[in-house]
Figure (cartoon, rainbow, N blue to C red):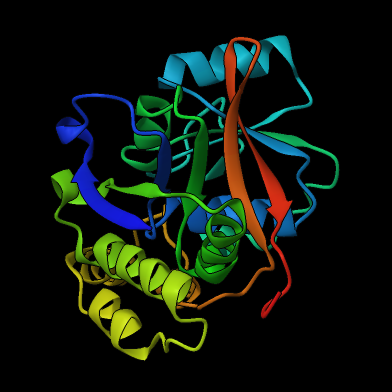
Length: 232
């Protein structure tokens, strides 16, 4: 299996298999939404598109980056989503990087959304699918986000070595600019953060499912997919 690590602007053509990485915080939030009972997540291209979806489906839950604003039910914070009851709900998610990356590779034959909390589950699914070429789409900082690169490198390592340890990769992510920005935002009282956000984003292999995105009619929809058991 060969790996490529690419920024969104570098995707000259649609890869066959794409793993879209956003550690802080889109796909950590997505995993937590499913852990809190969400049925599916719809990725919106714009804020207006997200609001239009919820206007047509008033029982859907909309979330976005940044501070709360009218029309959105939640913000892109794992600490805040962790405390929500999303049982049976559809979540509409619009973020600056993660959702943009997933939509950019929407025509790939396999699209997975990844963060540390689902990294091993992602690796197990890729191994089970016997994928030959995997493109990790690094969404943050124009492909330079060290937390996303660290997560992608960890997942790639786990594909070939099921006993690979996460410590060095988590340490890299913890020193990233995104982690520092979240910590600084909390210190400044920024409403879009929670005290546990960084720790939750750095939690490794918390969930047994991967996040698979695919087109359903005109929408890009993410659903949890149980990965093969470790060692299988």
